[in-house]
Image 1 (cartoon, rainbow, N blue to C red):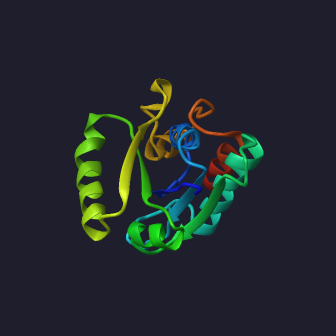
Image 2 (cartoon, helix red, strand yellow):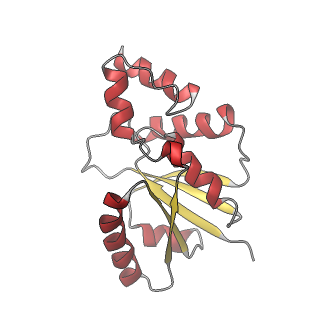
Image 3 (cartoon, one colour):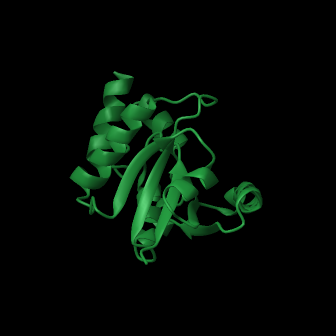
Length: 164
């Protein structure tokens, strides 16, 4: 039986840290569903359709990752509901630093309470990408800084268009 994992997030925008988590996950599961949150309680730079297109370009065009192994969707539900919909018992979460752990630990516990057949797997990005956050990337580019080392070419292009 094929194993799939749900990787939920805002991906506003996707960074090399997110991409590290996806690549590492593909070593332990057959498919990863990159689930882009479309909940209205956040102030996104890109709307969900833009984020889907940015993630597709980053993963499929820039990095040439396997489209058959990565599905990209948007969602407005509980992550545990997505697990049922996609027949997955795994939620992926990325950790950058110890400061992420408390929130992620609580979130994993709540997801477990909502569906006790779901496990959360924490993956760390590569050391050189652990400091990257979408918020930092947006701030750096908004101030005219160079973000080449933080995200893909097509993502940079989308960011530059947004900040022109």
